[in-house]
Amino acid sequence: MNALNIAEYTHTLGLQAKTASAQMARAPAAIKNKALLALARLLRQNVDALQGDNARDLERARAAGLAEPMVDRLKLTPKVLETCAQGCEQLAAMPDIIGEIQGMKQQPSGIRVGQMRVPIGVFGMIYESRPNVTIEAASLSIKSGNACILRGGSEAIDSNKALARLVAQALAEAGLPEHGVQLVQTTDRAAVGQLIAMPQYVDVIIPRGGKGLIERISAEAKVPVIKHLDGNCHTYVDDPCDIAMAVQVADNAKTQKYSPCNASEGLLVARGVAAEFLPQIGAVYAAKGVEMRGCPEALAILRAVPGVQLAEATEADWSEEYLAPIISVKVVAGVDEAIAHINRYGSHHTDAILTRDHMHAQQFLRDVDSASVMVNASTRFADGFEYGLGAEIGISTDKFHARGPVGIEGLTSLKWVVLGEGEVRT
Image (cartoon, rainbow, N blue to C red; front, side, top):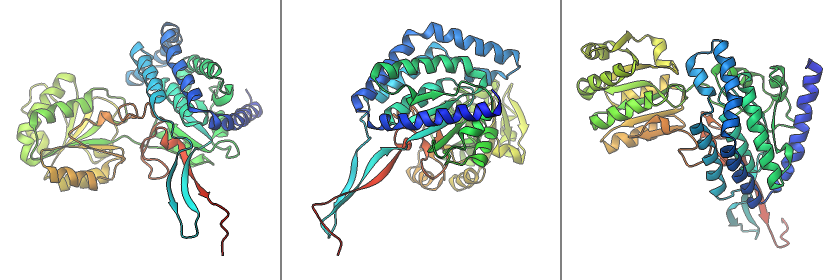
């Protein structure tokens, strides 16, 4: 497509989405749930066909020399598709919050004032790599009564088109508008520039991908953006703590999967437990090939661990999101220094404390300025599916309009409603 055709195409998508959004917003819960259950069924029925489409994307990605962690993000394995199907079913089982009225209070004038939860309208989703995001976004759009325009990465175009066809089939089965969920069918980057500059059609943009993509969209968008730039998450091992539990959780937080934004990139260890904890976690990381970039105090302890990969941490390491088998390690005096380090170097995404001290846990929860803060749990839990949201549209480190995993509520707004019986203002 040339530039003129791209502009015309994206404006057509926008107009169709805006028209469909009114029907999506009015749809009863039973109809929306019917579409979600149909989508879950279709995903399970089409595993083989979807993997065929996905194989073409994987072949192109490897031929282009894409790094293996990035190729991993592209995969539509049976397990990934089953998780998508379960996410649709989980959303269908959840109560419908659209139209809910809350906080209704009688005023001295006689009127009653409250707020009604309503869909945002149309959201645009721009994402890279993971094609399962197509299903997460579509399912959340359906449940929240919004229309959406999805623009996945060019590296996953065949997978995304195949998934979008199933979404269209599910919408049709339930009697919902075919343009309720639309996928941008071109890989031309000009379509992104058009999509983020259509406030007449699009109410919010949600970018999900690398820092470069999100920075570009945040700078150029003419509509509000829900975003996070980095996933520099931390696990802090406190004094006192259960050492065996701390080893297990710190291992999971880093190595369960290296590519997600909720994997721990920094390990902070209280000085009082460092001599006992660090050799144990060092042995675990050594066995899994994880490089530990440490402060001098941490390195002095870790050098005795056979086979461990060590490097001296630079200032830049404290802020780094590796998305790889590398972790920064720092010995700190205690909880105060850990909190100060996290608030300075972290990305305000997800941070965890492993402790036996209730007061330390409460202080950490209160003072760490992150979207998700955890006690005695792996940072890898920070996503919508694990939080019971059914699926997530992304994770927001903004403080407005949504924060943390963005599920149904994050795709809604509140409007004031006033109920009266003929009252007039005097």
